[in-house]
Length: 118
Image (cartoon, rainbow, N blue to C red; front, side):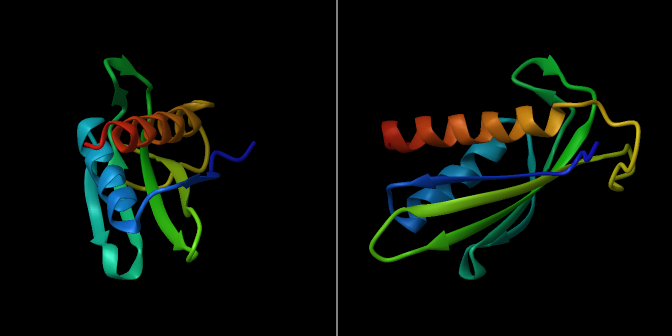
């Protein structure tokens, strides 16, 4: 069973707002921004094993890529995988569903931030 996961979601807003919502969402959910590169439409985040008060059991690394198609929505693709305690990619022994839970929470929070206008 692969522990890696890629999910894509489209947002009808400007690139600046979508990128900002992703950045603020990672911070709000307790993650750390490892790579912040809006110029190349990329971001990398390290998420803790706790999310919204729940212990998930594994840390996750998320790699965001943003695709801008004018005119049209901004596509946000997140590639994620679990990490061990020293930050290496887990190849076995990861808990199922952790990365999917983290990515789903990110997309939900981004939706909320964009709807409320930050």
